[in-house]
Image 1 (tube, helix red, strand yellow):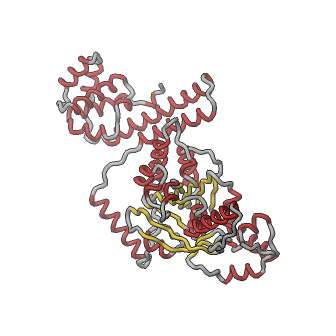
Image 2 (tube, one colour; image 1 turned 135 degrees about the horizontal axis):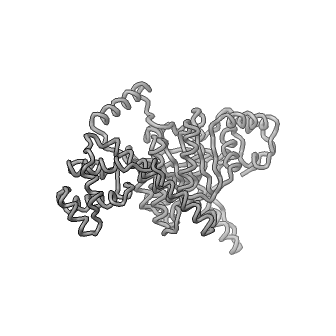
Image 3 (cartoon, one colour; image 1 turned 30 degrees about the vertical axis):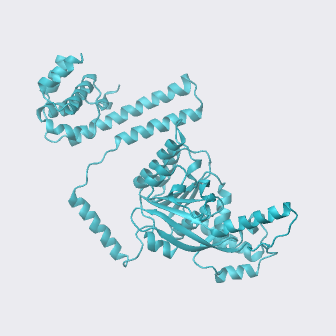
Length: 470
């Protein structure tokens, strides 16, 4: 092992400091583990210190010697080398140096292991990638440790935050603007570090709602990253174009547009091209790959202020685990990633079918798939609900049954272009729960605060060709 990957003098000095002043042990043990020491005797000595601490025994020369002799790990010369090292008045910098070198050694070992499993064992590339990401994740997690914040620092940061809020003119927003006034009032916006879960049954519009939220962030000239595990990037962009250009999605899909509409699409596309908007539609992605990609993107584009994952249940964790353990790892990792990158992360989630059998089909927290871990880790949980989806489904089923019997049935419900929608705040760690009422414009695949069309939407509609009837 190259000498720049370890420093025996520093290791001896830190161990000597503990022996001469056992109160130092807690500071060292908060950062270092026995395997962080390079020399085998130093590993054993620090492990003996750990055992004495657990047994509530003195960490001194006699007890350490006795412990090491009992375990057949005592080396008289090495022990004298440690005792003869000068104790340190301030161990913090030296502890950090030992940890730094330990992490570098782990990385060197990882490169050796990569070569072994890739060349000698000839494992499939996907398995090698999973192994590397898992090992690298473990190394980075173990290498990061933070001390307590003292009250002076916490108070200072809190006052600074309050002053920033005052400078904004006592705005209701603390985090990102959602684009919906009532939702802003109840949530104060989505804050950096928040994990927001948007959950719904199929066809309720959870993807559309998340894209509407993303659009508002883009409109404020901030960056957005979307991981689409189900839908190609082109389909996502068509939805965003429809909502932004006020042209029905179905018309965009087939390209049946008049000159004015083509001009509008061109204008909106030019606008999108100037935005920091990133889509990953790889589909098969695990949590470690997502973490690596988002970290890299955030480092290259600091303006990225929101990440969206569509959707949670399509993601895997590395390794073979039971599904509920996978979801637990994924949700916890997303929460930690949001805090690390200091951005809100929105993760879409499916709901169980059990709610379909209830008279009132409005979602509850218990309807979340693998709800325990998700509910625990999320800061905000939003449910998207449109009652008309169930009314239409029921009407169609009645008509189908009547047709089978040769009967004629009057359908008392007609599909609407604009449906009432509810955004149900099922959980909010730092605010109230409740319901925000919106309208879903089906033609444009977007949620809005008004049921009526805007002037621009009306003008666009008046010029459309062969508008299909619903």
